[in-house]
Length: 247
Ligand SMILES: Nc1nc2c(ncn2[C@@H]2O[C@H](COP(=O)(O)OP(=O)(O)OP(=O)(O)O)[C@@H](O)[C@H]2O)c(=O)[nH]1
Image (cartoon, rainbow, N blue to C red; front, side, top):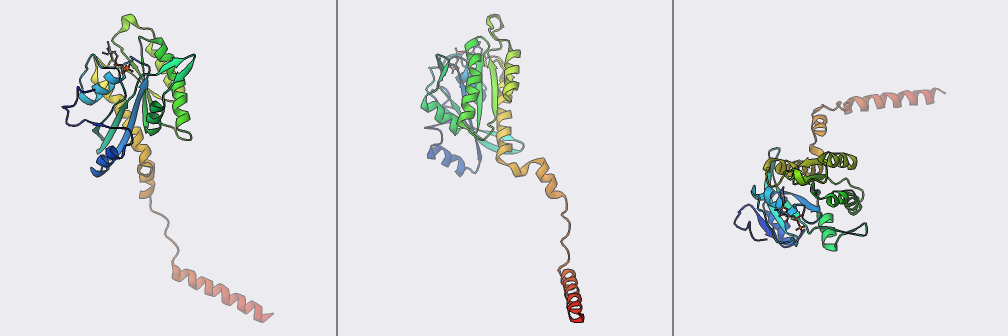
C-alpha cells in the first residue's frame, strides 16, 4: 500500500520481527508494542489500521498482502513505539480456519491482537470464536491481550449481527470489545488500540504495577542489631558451658 508514504511518523517495515525494524526502534530507545490486526476478508482491517495511523478514512484499498507500520504513542507519560501488522483476510474451509503460515507468524510475533468482524457479515462474526482459540494455541501459557472490534457500525440498514452479540462473545472470551465505524469515527478506533497498548505496557513492566510500587514504599522491619545478636549468642553459649561443667 502506497497511500501513506508521506506520513513522517509511519514507516513500512519489511517483515515482522525483522532485525532492521527492531534495531531502528531499539536505537531510538523506545519500548516496542507489537499488534496484529486479524479477521475475515473485507471487514475493514486495512481501513482500521490506516484510520488509526493517519486519522483518515480512505475508502478503497488494494487487497491486502500484509503490511507492517510503526508509530509512536504516549501511554501514561511514556512514549512507546508501536508496530501494527495488517494481515490478509482469513478464509474458512469446511468449518476450519484457513490460516497461512504467514498469518501464523504474525500472530506469534504479536504482543496483542485486534480481531475485527463486520456487523454486515455474519460469517465474519462466526469466525471470531475459532480465531480466538487459534491465537491462544499459538501463545500457549500466556494470556495475550485481545480486543474484538465490530466494524461498519454506520451500516445499520444492512446489519447482520447485533453489536450486543459481539459484546457477549467478547466477554465470554475474556476480551475487550469496541463497536466502531472506521468511516465515521476516529476516537473509538484510537481507543481500541490505546487500550491494547496500555495492557501490553503493563504486562511488560510487572514491577511497576501500583501494588508493587506501593509495597516498595512500605518500610521493611529493621534487621536485628548484629552486636545485640552476638552478645545474646555468647550469653547462651556460656550458660551452656556452665551447665556442662557443673554436671
Ligand atoms: N461503510 C463503511 N465501509 C467501511 C468501513 N470500514 C471499511 N469499509 C469498507 O469496506 C471495504 C473493505 O475494507 P478493507 O479495509 O479493504 O477490508 P480488509 O479487511 O482489509 O479486506 P482484505 O484486505 O480483503 O482482508 C472497503 O471498501 C472499505 O471502504 C466502515 O466503517 N464503514
